[in-house]
Image (tube, rainbow, N blue to C red; front, side, top):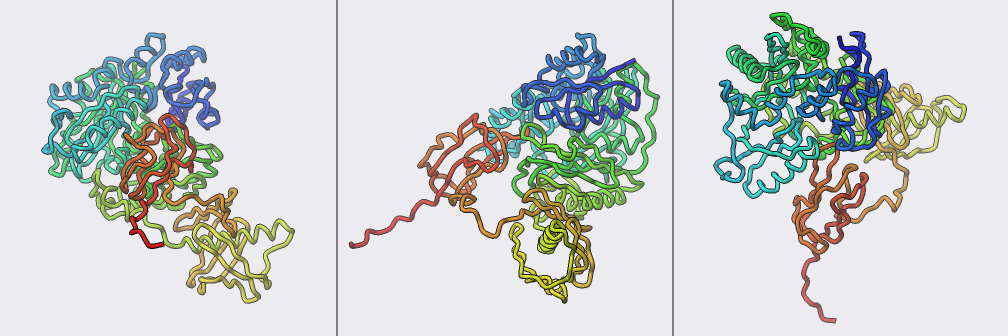
Length: 636
């Protein structure tokens, strides 16, 4: 019997495993990097061991330090979570060699599936349908588009779509570098990219006694940068014959490598309903809660029981209802999905299962994945689950870095999604419409100004009064609010049909066109968050006059996030001619590489970026200025 489990991971998944361990009477051990030392999962554990350093390579990818931590803390088992070393056969073997129980598949099974190229060979021998591989060195225009993938990992790292042969060499280099940073292995392979395909997967659970469960299907087609955003179970709209083929193929894949524990077999389903094996993830998946909800099981508990040698029942439970999960990321979807950093002041999503990795007041840093939490809803029908999740996210209060919350709400309510017409190109087609600014921000700015006035009145010992006052001017983002409080009520420029009903420092009630609505207002420094029943707004409070130091030269390229400069375009130097949209500088942040492009065609007049340089958000990287027009000589 397992008595103490060390989780070789961080944040949300570590906390998730700890919850099940507590329910089963098992003690827990956390490992943490220096930036993670104050996160909730560290304090939820019975013991914690610090891994000195900040980057994954210094900490969570150091299997020797993790095994040493388990022995020092008295753990007798190791759970790898997902990502990092979860699919490393060498790490699994090191855990076993140290006399510890490995809560995962046998090292030999991990090794067999660790390289996607070798995994495809095994699947072909087992009769599982495959996409034909493409040798990048021999690729022609007939092979396009191509998908480049990291051989040693997943999660979108090291993945690139190539549509022009001229881009292939550069994308291979970028994908290899990203894979090496995330997994310690830069091997990359290529296969045909299927347009408008669906990403469908099967959850498996296998014991050491010959039983293999195929726990239904999941659809994970809504992805950005090849990382999943919204997942659901079961996958909607699949013919029963196709479901049967997928389950049969998943079981065959597991049996081909004598699998044990939890795993996922992923398939690509094309527009004609043909399914192709993509890969097998020899670990728990981020999206495992939707399968748990539909089948009424605890997959982590099953992992622990299988690791102890227990036998699974011959047949899995019967599925019930539908479950949907949305990943809440600290990122800017309209700004190229750039990750965001800063303090998470408040995260409250009502009425859902919320698996979160950060607590209120924690700082979102640059070194790790940008996922804050997962919101999961289970309901009798798909329509009910989707509607409930969309409404819960709409009512959520999220104060801190910019997130993808509005994108999630709009995605869940998009006609293509509600009807089940989903594929991996969803965001390529709809992102512009899904990220358009929401109406109502001006009213939120007005509410912020009135809440601020109420707060100042309260600080000076007074109460809110509908008395004559001098005109007030405040600026929030792009909105300049000019108002007066008279005996007849509120008089605000540009708001002729707005009536003030009540104002307190944290709450304002306005009647807009005859409809009364509440605005909940919270302020942290110059950041103001206004939450309403129809959505939330993040505003920046500005002084009345602009500080000249805030101005930057036209054409300045500023770092959109903290990160490390990993590459500068070949031959880039001051005086070089560049074209609009040309990638000039690459930043690495949160294990992903982000290109910084020229804002316009012109001349590079300054270059402050260099490989290896750490930059903060807003740092000046370069300046591109329009080339002066040639003019004829004029007589003096």
